[in-house]
Amino acid sequence: MKLSNSLLLGPIVGGLSYKSANIWARAKSPATMYVWLGTSADLRDARRVGEAPLVSADGCAGVVTLEKLKAATKYFYAVSLRRVRPSPNEFHSFSTFPKPRSKKSFSFAFGSCYLPPDEHGGQTMDELYKRIKTDDLRFGVFLGDQIYADNIKQNGLGRVAVTVDEYRAVYEYAWSRPVMQKLLPDLPLFMTLDDHEVDDDWRWQDAERRWAHIPPLNQFRRWLAGLPPEQRNISPERVRAALKAYHEHQTMHAPEMMFPPEMNALGEFQFPKHDAGSLAYSFYVGGAAFFVMDTRTMRVKGEKKTLLGEGQWIALQEWLKKVKDDYPVKFIISSGTLLYPFWLDISHDRWEGFRDERERLLKFLATNEIEGVHILTGDIHSAHAVSAELNCPSGRRIPIFEFCATPFEQGGSWITNTYYPMRSPWLGKQKKIFYQRGQNFGVVHVDFESPTPVVSFTLHCNDGGWKTLPPVKA
Picture: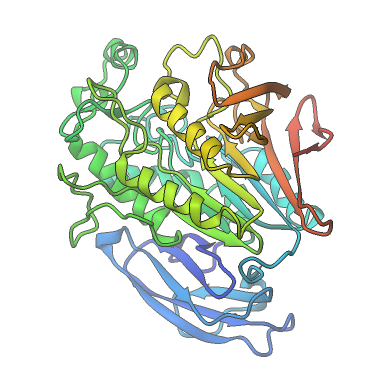
């Protein structure tokens, strides 16, 4: 539901914590955004608590940060482009997280790859919206491909996005579908990017990030379709435009980056040689810790391959040491699968294509005996659950799990049903628990009621009608 004739997208609750939240929205034209907040269901205490300018330089997107909130408290909020108090039906709600390290059970949803199949926006988000109350979902994690800027038929443009205005237009089209207008205000979200926010399977060719690249087959197909050079190839300027739009719609409402990349006064990414920054960040929900990776902006497939970049590696390793003992449940969020190699992965666009870095992570987890690790992933247009054990030098064997849910609104990919156990001295007893194609999303429940926390993964999938698979307990 649009809150005013001038409100284009949102609102979205992002960067949620036990004491703060970021309220994001985008308008059709420059305006001032006002946020109203209260704790009473009848809204009698709702008052205006913040405002922010929505300016053309940011695509008329902006965020109001709410601070000094109470932990584990339900709030009712609304966004307005006028100082007049919004009507009751324009209010939505969110609940702050419990204090860090507290043992409170919770559930959340995750998935990836949203490509609207029709003007309504598809079926998956309708089903996910129903589950907010049914499964008591506290938030959602969107693991990448929140838009498909390169999909000519379904991106609302009819061409490959090239300029920042075109990338903004793809967000506008995808997120303004009725199903998304209904979902976005009522499910707090944490997001990260994958490839289609820029272009299919894009990466850098050199460590200095002077030359970007997309697969030759993609270039050839676009040449056959008669597309102009700027839509067939990818330049640093196009990457910069895409990431500018990404920042406006996704990182703007995210938690603070752990090692942020350099940007100029206009919010444009600079890519200097010395910049080791990334879009990675972390957040905490009671006794659970989350690390959200950026597997794209530092990705290089040239003479010297890298997936995360050294700055993000340092941040990840320091985070793992920090949370090792204080947080019994840990989630590592990766847009691409880490523990699920498959034979027909021709492009090697996932961690299988960066084996040295995959071994580096597994070795670090095993040698430091990091317990309670669960990897959440998407991208491959099928869902799965995989279990394994970390082979520690001390002789200990520590369980590790990967849960995958994708795609939101697209068909499945049969080539991903060719899983094989990887060869690694740091990993043993690898097992594919299940595999599922078709539209889906995952729900994770973290149970702190017992002395040892229990993490359960449930898949909701459309297989001749929506059904729920039996939960997998980690």
